[in-house]
Length: 277
Picture 1 (tube, rainbow, N blue to C red):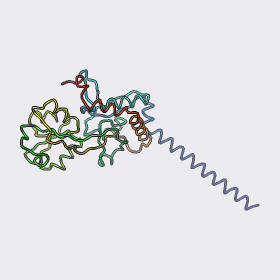
Picture 2: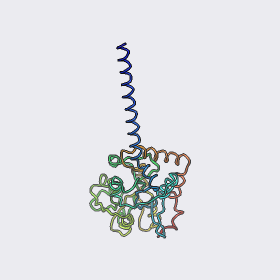
Picture 3: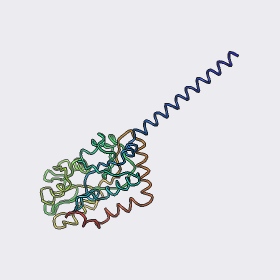
Picture 4: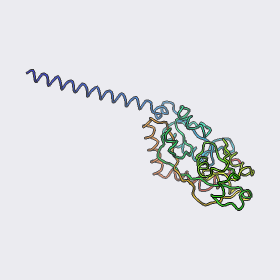
C-alpha cells in the first residue's frame, strides 16, 4: 500500500513538473512573439523602412516623391500586411547601425548579402540579384586595359561611402586612390567632370550613365563583376520577422510580382520622364 502511494505521489510530481515546463514554454513563446517587430508593426499600423536613394532602387521624382523598385517592394509588403508604410532615408554607411538602434523595422534598399554584414544583422532570402559595373572617363583612361592598368597610383576611383564596391576596390586595386562620397549623384559627377578616372558601382547605374553620356564615359569591360544576392536586413533575435519576410518573398516570387517590378525598373527606363534630368 505504501509502495502504491509513493508511486502515485511520484507520478503527480512528474506531471506537475511537465505542466510547469509547458507553462514556461508558452510564456517564453508569447514573450518572443510580443517582442517581434511584426507585432510592433501591427500595433503601430505602419511599417518603417530604412532605405537610401540609389537609381533605380529608390529615387526622387520631379515632385520630390520616392519612386523605384525598393519603393514598390516596400509599399506592396505594407499593403499585404494591412498597414501603412513610412520611409526613413538614411546615409548608407550608417544604415545598419540605425536598424540596430531601432530607427526602423527593416532595411529594404538593395543591400547585398555579405558575411561581414551578416555578423551584425540577419538577412532574408534573396529577392533580387545585383552585380557591379564599371564606368570610365574616355579621355582620362585612353589606352588603358581593365583591370590591370587601373591598379595604379595614377588612377582615382569614385565610390559611394559604405557600399560594397568600395571594399572590392580596396582589395583589387590597392594602389589606386579611392575617393568616397555620401551622395550617389556626387559619385557619378566626379567621373563625368574628369576629377576621377573610374567609378565602380552596382548596376544598372553605370550602364544608365553611360547611355546618357556616351561622349564622356564608357565601360572598359563586359565582365559581370562580383554578382550577389540582395535581401532585406532585420535585427538579430527575431525569428518571427525573418519567417514572415521570407514567406512574403517566396509568395511574391512565385506569383511573378517581384520579377515584373524588377523588369520594369531595371530592363529599361520607361520611368525616365518621371525623374529630373
